[in-house]
Amino acid sequence: MKQKFWLFGTGVEILSDEKQSGGLYDLIEGTFSPGVETPLHVHNQYSESIYVLEGEFTVYLDEEVIVLKPGETAFIPKGAPHVVAASAPVPSRGITISSPSGFAELIRLTGIPYKPGSDGSEKNDIELFMAVSEKLGDAILGPPGARPGNQVN
Image 1: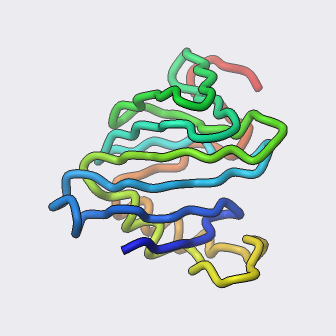
Image 2: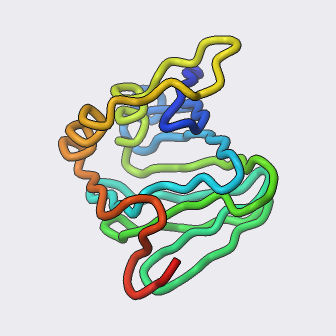
């Protein structure tokens, strides 16, 4: 049931969603280019766990800065503002588990379906992304580079 998409230049693959898990979780694989990071955001309907396969991710969570290397994981509770950044000089790849399901729906509704030879340069519809995010209980709190709490970039 794998489905591949581009979401703001990041390759994401839905490995398992609400159909397979009965709504308990989504399992998503993502590959971030070096230096790419999410905007400051919050998930109000689901928690998120990140497991690193390759490269390195830095998670900015409340007052914490968590650097994750391959084989390491971080838990982001529901309602916690956070940023996930690819901090290695090479592409970083990881698995996200969102519980309960919700993230896969956001990807399906707003992502650009992957086509062989595509490079992720096609632009996502930011207005659609914001509307679907709000419907699913997610909120963008700041642009890439913004940090939760008193952190400074």
